[in-house]
Length: 287
Image 1 (tube, one colour):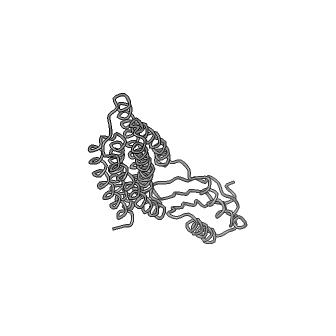
Image 2 (cartoon, helix red, strand yellow):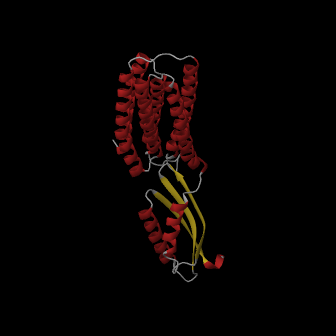
Image 3 (tube, one colour):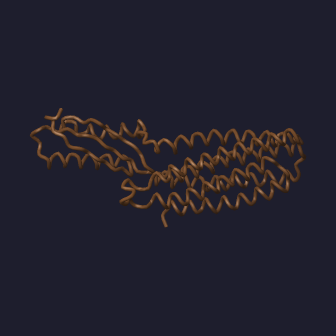
């Protein structure tokens, strides 16, 4: 079992436990902010399931049907997860607005904020582990899952703090207001996730920072080759695809030209993990 699959399974377990905790306490206390957190965690669970499935598929090697591998499955899962967050946020806002119009007293508030603070602590530990593996494996699916849990850290803590204030002041209207603030925060995070996950599906180029690294490694050998052009980049899952044309002097042998290409590919591979590089050789007579 790979590190990605193990940490995705951990996320599944933690989200299941938190949903049960929040749902039971939310129904017991009648707090819309706690129930909204239960809904949020349900979305997190769905996201974890999607991430768990996608990381297993994305790790499959390239085949005849998918010659570039299965990496974009992770991007698709990230898009689905962000849309789930949008749906959950709208539902929370609708429910919270209804509570403002038809207010109800909250019971056992102390139990509510204690559970929220516990939830925040659990998600902090799990999301930290997810982010670590996501960076190591360059996994957009795990990064999306970690983002879900990170928003849950803030929102659970915010709900807990709101309930604590209600416990002190007795102002019950703070509960739905906190829920709406939670939903707005989640919507912002969902938009960022959607943008990150969706761009690679359109074969958007690598970041300017990554392209600079590629060019710097190519330029190290500028005294040997004649020129380069048509540099193209894209990303599929964690794999960075790099394509360029390298122009050599007419009198350079094919073997020597290939040796330079191998050195460039090796240098780029050491600077950027998970790369597949295609260099097309050209003679300066073509320019």
